[in-house]
Amino acid sequence: MELLDSENWEDFFLAPVVVLMLGKSGCSACKMWTSTLSEWTVPEGVQLGKILLDTPGLGRFKIAHPWVAEVDLLPYNAIFIKGKMKENWAGGGINRLESRLNRFI
Image (cartoon, helix red, strand yellow):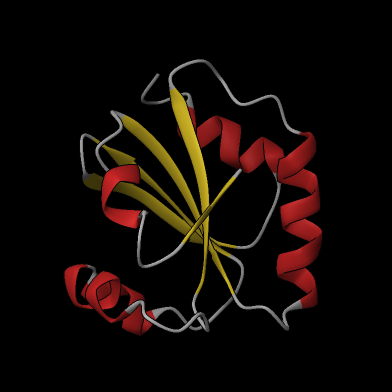
């Protein structure tokens, strides 16, 4: 899983299929989900990344993705296909992730 910041998030979204996890550094559920994702076998052609919303310098990301302001439960996940969000949901669960991702790959 790639940790995204103000320097690399734009390039990350250029990938054809992106799974993005949003969290915060003090979120225990986010840490558990990160641990689960780190053991997951990412399907070929899928980019997996994480943004910690309390990381300084992410203003451009939040402006480019105004939906982030409405996220109230963490961890939060989104699937992007060719830069467009297709799915989003709060919480963890590999089965949930795979069933949603399988719609697009």
